Image (cartoon, rainbow, N blue to C red; front, side, top):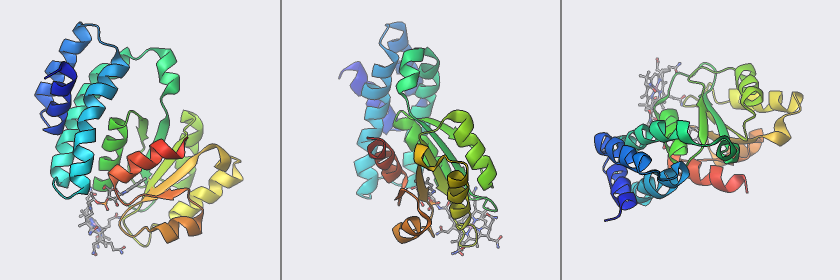
Length: 210
Ligand code: B12
């Protein structure tokens, strides 16, 4: 098995120690950081995605894979040259105001990172003003909002309205998700896309910027 395939397998199996060891070996051998990410770390997640979609893997296993991948990412990220960083897209993510649910949001963050995105995780209970400020500060291409309560999901609309007021709506794509959220709701509030799960978030984020 090639080194890349071994690394991908370690991610798939959620073996963080093995991921760290193999990543270090590649770094020491002078393999390009973006190659380690795309052909090893993200390739491992590409084994996970279809299995999760098919119901052959469950949330805790996916989280272990994503966590293992995150360990590798942490080692490789500082080595990425500035020119490459410009090519990496930034996504600001958070759970909306009044809402403290973050299990799904955290999963989305990990999977987006596994897709090679630079993810700014704002945490929970994020007001429209904080979302908009973060989009500005980080020059984000995508904003992702999570809501798990029917009482808090309307805050997503407030954030989109504020983006419009600030003249930023054309500069950032808005993805929404969470159990009570639907495609209809996303259309109603003027979001760009609804994602049913973390894998869909990664696929949508990749396609929506093209
Ligand atoms: C765990 C949980 C909690 C935990 C949260 C812990 C934590 N750190 O998150 C605790 C116990 C703290 C909690 C508290 C409450 N909860 Co609660 N909670 C749940 C529960 C059981 C599971 C949610 C979960 O984690 N699911 C697993 C994750 C993986 O799935 P997910 O969140 O849907 O995320 C996936 C997708 O939706 C999508 N996604 C999610 N976000 C995003 C964002 C983007 C950008 C994208 C693209 C995709 C995306 O991708 C994710 C991964 O695949 C749900 C029940 C349920 N069936 O949803 C109730 C539920 C959401 N809770 C509920 C309620 C009522 C509450 C409380 C008000 C209870 C109370 N009386 O105190 C409080 C509210 C606290 C607050 N202010 O937020 C209700 C909401 C009812 C409603 N319709 O509004 C639910 C539905 C339970 C119920 N049937 O009554 N809760």
